[in-house]
Image (cartoon, rainbow, N blue to C red; front, side):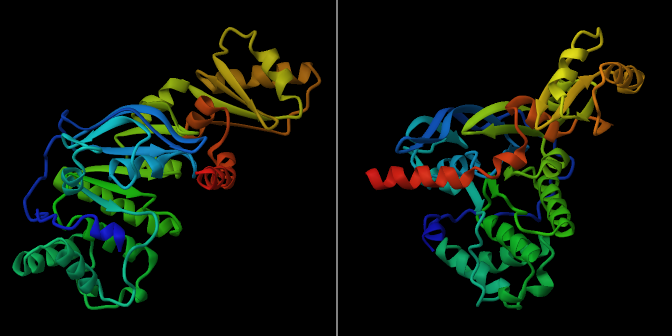
Length: 356
């Protein structure tokens, strides 16, 4: 309830009926972060990050749970006060102009905030009342938004009967009620099955295409970020490791990727780094990942050299670079391994609060 009340008095209404088809994404910067930092005692959740988001783009914040994604969004939405640094959303400072920032954004939280005992329409209506939206406008906009997310025929159904995907779509519709300039989606498909995830991403993509709305998405699903985002910032341990388009991020690795699993991965790396075509490699958990141009032309030579050195290969595969490869390349670990660490981070935060 507190999260909803923080947006009270937002009276601008979203107008999906206006045609935005064919609108080109602007180069105007709608969000700017400068050395933004958040500390919890001795633990630094977000560590001096700086970047800009262009108006109309889908910007992805990619990283494991506990990397600092949600903390960053909480600061940008004024729910958390930064420890240092600053940020501007739609021209308004997140510290000194909180109310104006809140009028500029919509927010779909990672944790559900719907009332299961109300219908879809009642959830929207209640939200509109808290925002001081007049009855006539509220009625019109609720109908338009429920139609936008494909729930118009479910408006009188109790939310507790909805699937996870339907609830997410309803939360997105609710977040658009006051016509925000920016929509924050914090892990919008977390806990959903693959089919529902794909369907929800279609809704998000369509929303952006139809309205030109700027959307900031946090996720740890590589395929989602690759498929939908115009640009991606990879964050790990509170720091931005790299920021670019998905295509450019994969191009930074270059060429193809050959992954060789062997108990002597280190020896394979030393053996192959002498080759003229060798570019770079990473060794991780008995697997060496080699970045190489035209891998098919060199795979026979690679296998021959390894066999001549009497090294056993457990497996070998060739593929185009993925964002998983990008994450490994820039962080030295896989995103799945980092998933195991938030529990440790939570303990650090708890100790920090105890000391206060």
